[in-house]
Image (cartoon, rainbow, N blue to C red; front, top):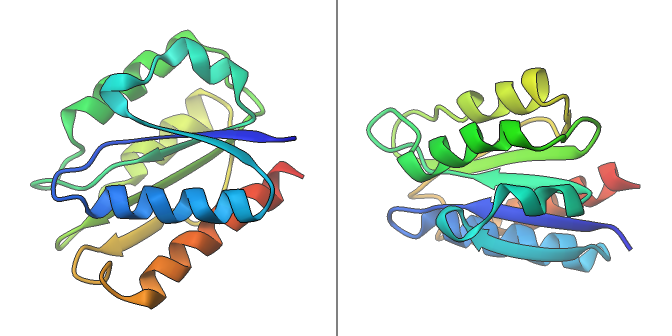
Length: 144
């Protein structure tokens, strides 16, 4: 059975909502999932997963520090060929390409396109939650 880890952090719980819905989509598609906040995750454990999914809000036009730190630490693990995906919430502008680019170009991961970006005011809708579950299923499909 394929497995995935979702590593995320959140400021106003919007990215956490996304992580929970993506987890549901992955599980519905038969993928074993572990979900951790960035400060609780260890980069060494990434080698044990087939997919690494990172979630981060855009906060004042930047990534939050816990995800920046985790992304920097990811260089210590060989992730080449693993499936990668990026998601996050934003208020007026998303900067999630700052996560996607190193995952693809430095770590050599097989990325799920496009990045899942949701405006924080959208996340209260059933449609946005459904989009997150579908993103989880899209990750699962890339694993097969």
